[in-house]
Length: 178
Image (cartoon, one colour):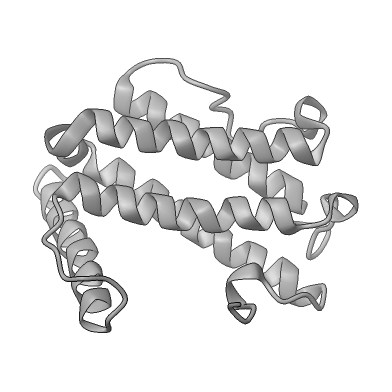
C-alpha cells in the first residue's frame, strides 16, 4: 500500500469498527458507549477469537484430520495456521519473537486437540494483552496489522463453518441459545 492509502484505510477501518459497536448498541445488544480505538480493536479481536476457540474445543478430536477436499488444510491445520499467524502479527507489532509464528506449524508438534486448542487460545490471549499494553497510541500505530489479522481470523472462521456444514454439524454460533 502507498503511504497515503494505508492511513486512509486504517482510519476507515477504525470508523467501521466504531460504527459496528454503535449499530449493536442501537439494536439493544449493549448500552451505547463511546469506545477508544484500542477498546474497539480488542472487542473485535476477542469476539472472533472466542468463536474460533469455541469451535476448536467443540470439534471432535477424531475429526481434526477432516478436510473439505484434498487441496485444503485439515481442520487442525487451519487452527494451527490461525495461531501461527497471530504470533506473526505480534512479532511484527512488537518487533520481538513471541510464540510459534510459522505460517503452518506442523501438526506433529501439536499432536493433540488439547495442545492445538491451547496454542490457539494462547495466541489470542497474548494478542489481547498486547492491545491492552499498547493502548490507543500503539494500537493506532499498528492498526493495519490488527485489522488485517482480525479479518484473517474471521476468514478462517468462515472456512471452519464450511467444515461444520459439510459434515452435517451446526456450528456453535448457529445453535439455539439456551
